[in-house]
Amino acid sequence: MKQTQLIKGVLEGCVLAIVAQDEVYGYKLIQSLHQHGFTTIAGGTLYPLLIKLEKNGALISKVKPSKDGPDRKYYSITPQGLQEFREFNQQWFQLKNHVDKILKEMDDE
Image 1 (cartoon, rainbow, N blue to C red):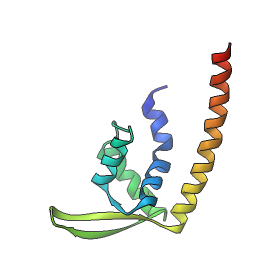
Image 2: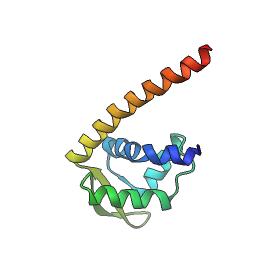
Image 3: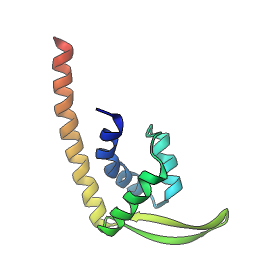
Image 4: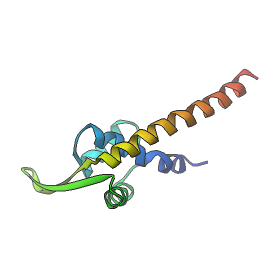
């Protein structure tokens, strides 16, 4: 299985986690993902996801002026997005525990 398939499955939850900490614009979000090891994430992957999350009500955006160039679109999490993140977090840890058990059994053999 390619790593990109695994990342695609968890990227939405990771984006919600980062935006839940503070509002952020797209490029800064990509930088944050890269700093956390998601170095293959590019704008072509992230921006459609941000549009989807906003359309579904998990995020809202506001355009703000930037002293460094053109205006930036900042994303904030909504109460619905926070609930989606909590559900992702719970599901992630359950899945991680199941996978860890199976991998541990394989190591023990």
